[in-house]
Amino acid sequence: MTTKTRSFRSDLGAVLALGLPLAGSHVAQFMLAVTDTVMLGWYGVVDLAASVIGAAVYFTMFTFGLGFANAVMPLVATASASADDTDVRRVTRMGLWLSAGFAIVVYPVFWYSGTLLAALGQPPEVVPLAQDYLRLMGIALFPALVVAVLKNYLAALGRTQVALWLTVSAVFLNIALNWVLIFGNLGFPEMGVRGAAHASIWVQVATVVGLALYCARAAGLRRYTLFQRFWRPDWQAMGQVWRLGWPIGVALVAETALFSAVAILVGRIGTFELAAHGIAVEISAAMFMIHMGFSNAGTILVGRAQGRGDTDGLRAGARATTVASVCLALATMVIYVAFGGHLIGLFLSPDEPAREQIVALGAVLMMVAALFQLADGAQVVAMGLLRGVQDTKVPMWIAAFSYWGIGFPAGYLFGLGLGWGAPGIWVGLVLGLGTAGVLLMWRFWSGRAVAV
Image 1 (cartoon, one colour):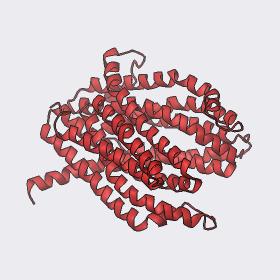
Image 2 (cartoon, rainbow, N blue to C red):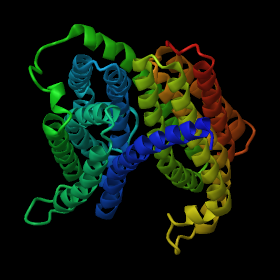
Image 3 (cartoon, helix red, strand yellow):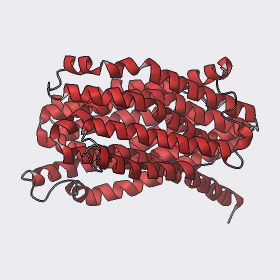
Image 4 (cartoon, rainbow, N blue to C red):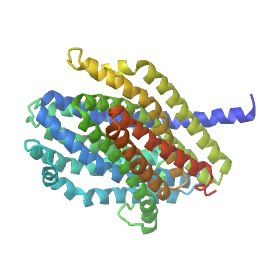
């Protein structure tokens, strides 16, 4: 076995050691939303509709705010690799400050959400419940963003397991609190969708407490004194996090908005098409969480190499991250092509009258989703690698152009203009995400973004 082969295996092992726990944490975070949807579906249709509408607003705000948390990861990775404990503390603290400030600034959107939803033509019986839900979820946004910052801080320092197990624990706590507060069990009042929002607040607060205690007391982390004199501003570090973070937030919102717009386009075709689209998106989203874990691993490895001034190590970590994502995509493509229809069928009752029609269309969408995996994996991994070298502004413009200049128009043309239906809209998605993947990968591997 050559030294080069051993080195690649070592790099790939590092990607998996970081990426798989992070992927598991992302999947668990995804399951928090799924458990809310399932349990509110058991409770009532109106409350479920209120949570679906409210969650769309909440997730948009959360995604934008997540930019500051994601900026913390490469900054901490670089600082720790250069043994700059002070910078590790400074950027993490200011990431917490910016996240808290963002949650305060956008809270009026949550408070006056009823007016917004009514103006958008949402059902009158849903709007008051959705507003109540969002007013509570606006409170939950603050601890949720703090959780994201602390998770990324720990991940950048190689502490991925604690975030994974705390997030898994949060899923079970969420289920228990939902059972008590949504349905009014154990003597508590029956609150429906409001109960789900209260549960979310307490789950996020509990997770913050767990992460903060670990950050403050764990061996190897106490030297960073993360919360000592926390109230003191550090404008230089805040500027670093701000400059890196806001373009990340914009790029994330651009992608989220694309998927929302695609759902609207599919909804114009028909109910069965929208059902098949929704199921296929859920399946693809679960796999996307694993790509995101690899993307985070790439951010950390590249950021560490950047901190060491190690160009060869930077490219080796990026290469191993890309290979891991491509292998996952290829394995997923085989599963989607061979078992796509069966996967769609798992989400439908055997007694559903339209089951065969939805499964048939869903199987076609899963064929397109096979290509989707390569495109989506490429763009999210490339984004992660570029964040590792602290390059976010140009990637933001590349993402916006690819998603909205290519993906959405192509989806509209193929799906509605040429009459290809939902598969045509998904082809547009593949083109948009694929364009982003190619351009972002080119930017990284051409060396334009590499500063060492």
